[in-house]
Image (cartoon, rainbow, N blue to C red; front, side, top):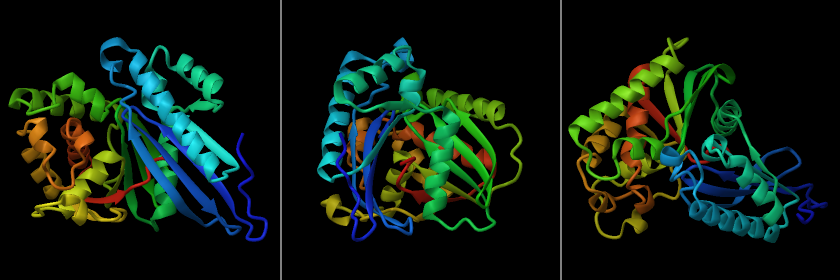
Length: 313
């Protein structure tokens, strides 16, 4: 049971959200003021690779479910420690697609006491868009908001804060890594096949875009790691000392993405882990993630990317 997280004197309340993704489980705890502004007081993540066996078996594996349940229980304890009075836990692509996804959600509720809501892809896209529109002033710009996850990618095309089109894509960094063997140095033939596969999917699911966006705003680990690599280019020694505190709002060009994509796809996973700014637990799936983004940029005719670092939370 959640404690009462409302500060009667200041009119503040504390809320928590747990995002159960294909690759990573995340927690954010915020303090909301009476004017509905908020500040983040904790933001944590743990990689459990819940969807690690989906491609082969269409089901969540026992070890992945156990690791994920442990992470969710840990995050529930953290949230209770902050005295939050509301906690929402949502599951996305891996649980949504798995044959035993409903059983996993039921197990989480019965053993941990948290209702785990399996949200549809359209809702996942809307939540990503809401997070972005609350972080940035969109004005009247025509933008593409893209959330690259481990099992799926959501694209929202909007005119300012008005959503014009939602395009859920069954393209994820973990899924494509497993499908095309991109964990380590990928052959030219496999890389070409992956790009062709992505392009066919974009033509089928997005069709002709209603406009050419001025900007692509990206959320998810692919984007935050890309920004960190660009910001730390040329850095040597202890990378942690040079890492930026936040990449939110950082902007980069497609040419910078292509530089790192062409560099990383030729590297074995062990060598990728030494690239400044790239987290070690992202090294095996970064090439697939960047390839999704690069194909989207080309398809939509966009060169400029802005980073958002909060996902759907």
